[in-house]
Length: 90
Image (cartoon, rainbow, N blue to C red):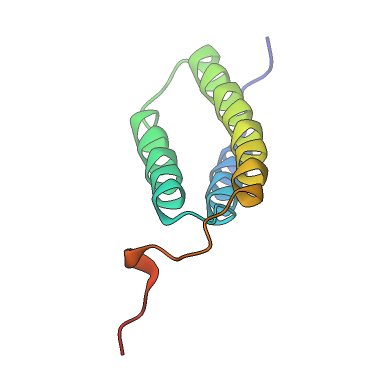
């Protein structure tokens, strides 16, 4: 089993997941990914057991890889029009 990740490693994973969320061109997917990241970290905030912390960190790393691949796929089929939420009204 992997050792317990440090606080800086966990924060780095959090920032990486949020950066990956910015890569999605679709507003709904981008916001869902950001919300899911924040909710996941809040849910695991109170973990104490080192093995459960390591498992949650490992799951987060796999989610980061999946998000990165999905961002590439979504960019290939990005809609030409912006979402209503992204249109700036003058």
